[in-house]
Amino acid sequence: MNPEQTGSRVAIVTGGARGIGAATAVRLAADGFAVAVVDLEESAGKDVVDTITAAGGRAIAVGADVSDAAQVGAAVQRTVTELGPPTVLVNNAGVLRDNLLFKMSESDWDTVMNVHLKGAFLMARAAQEHMVSAGYGRIVNLSSSSALGNRGQANYSAAKAGLQGFTKTLAKELGKFGITANAVAPGFIATDMTAATAARVGVDFEDFKKGAAANIPVRRVGAPEDIAHTISFLVSEGAGFVSGQVIYVAGGPLD
Ligand code: NAP
Image (cartoon, rainbow, N blue to C red; front, side):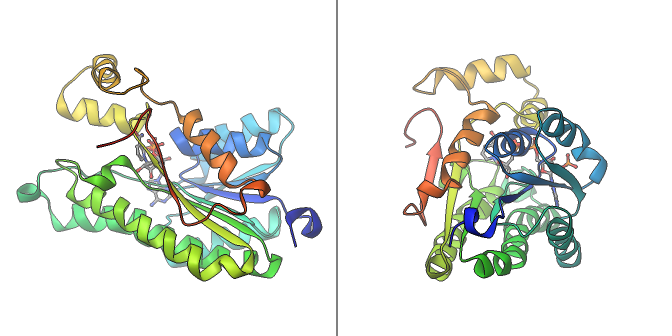
């Protein structure tokens, strides 16, 4: 069965109010999906929903903390009621709590694990039943080039590497139900997240981007749309034989 047969082309994008998530929500709507824009505050997703509806698409803003099982359950249920059963899930919500290991607090560790890892687990567990019923689904998890190790990001790199193992396991468990699971691992993408990193290290964001671009083979930093484009491919029907993969989208290979 495919979404044409079930009539359900509904996508959930977490952390959809800003950055990569917002670009992905807009792109998937342009691809023909009705999109649930899930973010911490429902009001935060309003601009993205307005952009989508102004272009003739369908979207709702849903407030939920992805690390809270009850809120995740309610968010998925609202999506089902207002848009239809989701057959696409993009686990994009993320936070940074960077610090060198000796200065990293337990709460910095727990926050990052809860949002990235537990959040992806809770969302996938809640969404999969609708995909299994449809006999079709696409799950994309946002990993990062930091999964390969990055100074000051013991928590984040562990979570992003963990998401790669999580993705491969979902691919193995859910493949027989017509569901694929893949991870996209962005390099440097210009968003509020990287702007906050520049501010934290005391470098002007434009200079920060220039410095990063000089070390990227294509000589530019990424835009949220670069990631949205890759996700658009992975959630397309034609990508049904691509599963359990980690695609680095970083303007070149990584060491
Ligand atoms: P961003 O601009 O900071 O946006 C992240 C979004 O996630 C925000 O809207 C944020 O809401 C939301 N969020 C945070 N915690 C949440 C929670 N518990 N429940 C629901 N939503 C939550 O980040 P981005 O740069 O677009 O990054 C998106 C994803 O790509 C993240 O997983 C990130 O780790 C990954 N990534 C980014 C880069 C990069 O260079 N930017 C590189 C590699 C990987 P608030 O606004 O309310 O905080």
